[in-house]
Length: 381
Ligand code: SF4
Image 1 (cartoon, rainbow, N blue to C red):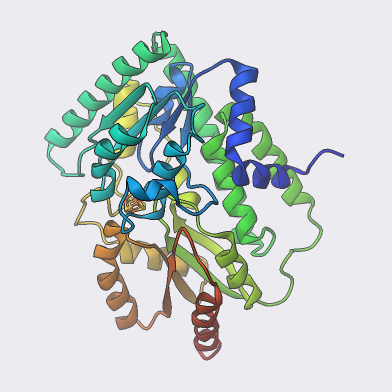
Image 2 (spheres, rainbow, N blue to C red; image 1 turned 180 degrees about the vertical axis):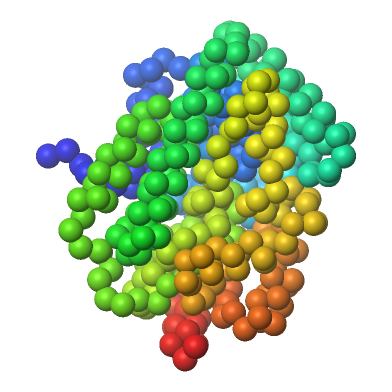
């Protein structure tokens, strides 16, 4: 019997290597790995190649240790490890945006570790209100387009880009619909299932993924009972930049009697927030989306938009009793903002707990103990 749609998402998310190798043989197209978080994938798609968001493997870093420091985040360490282990030999190109210290270090690491023929470094600018950021962004998009045309051998026309934007917007719409189903019926989908659903979109050609997501909507509408039936404590998660969160952590949250009702994480609502509003020139439309200040992103250097206010808004909208900060270990952008977020939430009396997401977690006991204490606090609120 065929696997159910959500099971298919989990399978692809767990083993992107086999899925993408087969996809490449079947479709005879190049695959471009886009390092999270803000690469305009639509331009890659319009060139006839497949953009996929770079992922971390489920193996411990071993050979990569000789190339990348142990104090790098899990994604950069695991990605380099995969490259030196030749697990990503089917990838035809890598695109990196110099958005944080660790991404800025990648050019040097990739030079040593990668045999991938096409590597592009984009410098997508900080969100200053002055026109200079916007114009610079458009120049970068234009440079990116020219490079992609050379690698793909195809011309990116307005028609192909327009089609790509439509397909991507449809994908955002479907993911938003699935999130809305969870908001209305928390527990209808488990945390790790939702994570895999969003991750599948990052790994698949969006047109194929759209068909799968339509079936996910149908599957959820047909679920007679919520998976998590009893009266649970609603929480939201935020943080989790660039990379997947260990599914064990999501399971522990639920095993302890909480339910994630919404989030502000990258493999989550951050990824599909805001459609591209087409306003004539398509590159300007893509630039307008990048320049939006919500959901706030600590890598965009926008110090005027308050991330904490945004997180509180998400929590209040969902009647969540608590906030779980999922912080990727050694992620400077989140670490810089965290003390302020923690203090502001404490001042407002909103319960919050920090859980560090590590690439290699040897024991989840500590995480469980921390979250158990958090549940006890929430039960007393
Ligand atoms: S933003 Fe954080 S998780 Fe993303 S690449 Fe930079 S350090 Fe790693």
